[in-house]
Image 1 (tube, rainbow, N blue to C red):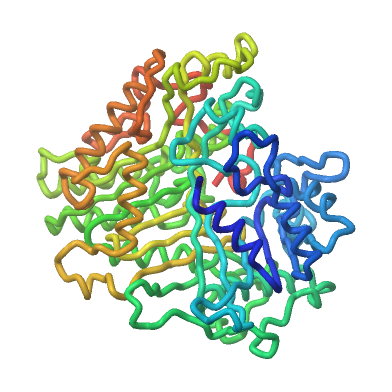
Image 2: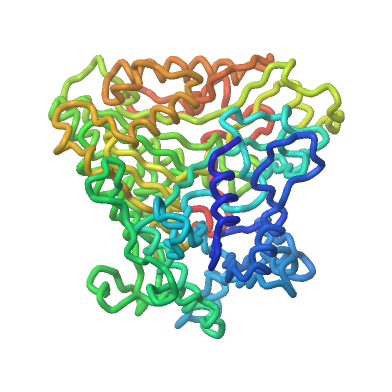
Length: 592
């Protein structure tokens, strides 16, 4: 079973003093560990938290208060379960705070826009834990945490296999989720596969996560600040616990955030490190971290993200000014420098086939439009750099590639007892083609196998601006495995091990080319698998595949143009232009 869910389950159950959970969504009915398929149901998160509260644990849950959800419409528009979670824990020892995304010191219109458009998007868990190797008599407790892209809610539980139909009656019998083709059901499928990244933290970085939770709770739930536990040495916590500095497995970590003073109180000693706009202090250190590490990368960059939109000031066609974050153009600049200096350098970007929602809907189509404009700008700049260097035998995709994971099942993987889908529905088409996208929800960046960023922030303006959605990420590296320590050789620490495991999942096998991601051979080997999977996915004949990555289905010209594929302008089965189109009615702040 997925290790994440087992680790969080164990950490919560082992807590003695406190459990803090925060997220965009929290679902009390989530089953964390699903081992014995013969059971009708497994223990839920809600049941575990109520037990822990009865045992004397302080259990605080802070979930985004979705504006559209209420007593009459508890599901809301986004399916965050905030009303249902609050109702579930009423009268128990579990305290739930529905935290709105407010905007103060502004007019009613702006306040309404912020409340209805922007979110609290951070996701994490904090608990107390035993001190390692301290002996049975030790009563001291340390702080550990989990943080990344995964909310403790429905649809997130998955395995690297990412099945469409096979687990509908087993692992997902109480957790059917499909937020793409909304008419799909658990009786007929397919489900929406989910790919995400979360991390475990202990030591000083766990205290930073704790401070973020406390500061947000105090800012927006000040009447109940007394519920925050006094986590101090006096209360039996070893707050200065950390791993030995000479431990080769030690990591150096730093917390980055996108958040403003409407949602958190900033300490005065960091006022010189944050920004001010219209009297509102804000932290955009996630974007700054991305820019810094893109610029210092020497060999390659790998990004997985739910969205990829930005640098609108450099788009070839100026359709919006609402996506100025500089991550895409910084990636271009780094590739352009590599071309000018004759360096081996590659950028691999993994994104979902399309955002959640009906692919034909106005919101999804507009997001795809901004994404294709971003891609077009990047390919054009790289093509121009190649032309300037007179590298006529090179193509922009030799330096930059966009991949997307999809699932193609074989007929023998589909249980025989599934109900027939509704005639003429997308579900019926999917049952015939046995194909579906794997939804990429991870927010991960790896630089040179040396440094990684993991968290809740997407590559779009909502996540990187600092004044829109509230986000958090952690940047981390192992001091024993840096460019300075490893010299010209490959950096072979845990970042590399993790990346190799991840790419083996995406490609269906471990490949020797993956050992040198900056090489032409690596890009060529991955592209070959991805192109084959793309051709297979577009065909209507079911063909099970072990690998998931396919080339993102657009045509990338040698001259840098990005256009629709002649044989696949619309998404198979669901419809909707792959290249997207702008909406005439949606506010750009919503879709960027």
